[in-house]
Amino acid sequence: TFKSTHLDPGGFAEYVRVPALNVARDVLRLPPDMSYVAATMIEPVATCIRGIERANVQTGDTVIVLGGGVTGLIHLQLCRLFGAAKVVLTDFSDYRLGVARQLGADLALDARTDVAAALRDANEGRLADVVIVTAGSISAMEQGLALAGGGATVLLFAPSSPKATLPVSPHRLLFSEITVVSSYSCSPQETRQALRLIQGERLNVEDLITHRFDLAGVGSAIELAAKANNSLKIVITP
Image (tube, rainbow, N blue to C red; front, side, top):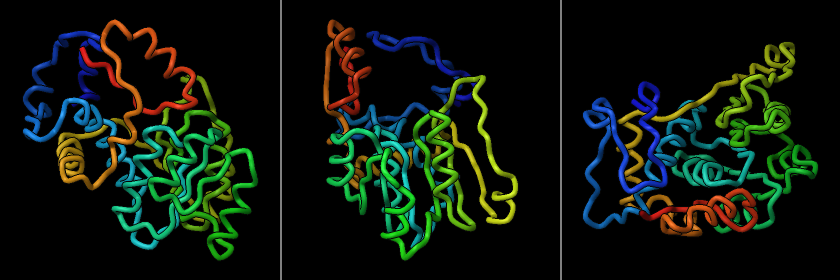
């Protein structure tokens, strides 16, 4: 539904106009025990559920997640729920790598190091079965392709700039049987699944919400989000 309407602009406001299609198909009644703040995580969790399904994460897989922002850390937890045997996460931020370890990453690696070597050391000489790229830079996508083992799936989850191009080796894609997929937005089914996971506390979303501001503090919230050193999800409460 979001793909069809994109909603009307209304962030950082007391009210937002919602198209009839979204009301009919994807407006959810919150359980009495779920806070509005926790409910802000339904949409990001739903998009990540779609990503996990598109990437076809299977029981026993070794998964590497590139990027330790909110969606990267959600993917990390979902990989566990979907049965991944090993989950590795990379980022530039020591803070985010620390959060990844707290959330159960088998390895949390500085993206500037030799990630492929560390992955092979931890994975019996093999690269990843699934690579999830949650950063929108071309360099992250290139690294993701390089970390894909034979028969692997690479999920491109974050948008790049419209004019960006990604150099790939068709030879390697063919002979290593690497599948590249993308994922965007979520369906009504995935938002409902996300609500159930959050309500059932199957995912730790509370620790991803690091800061809260009222409407008067929107400017400070945006400045904090732009730095992204010691923050993750920032919620505005009108």
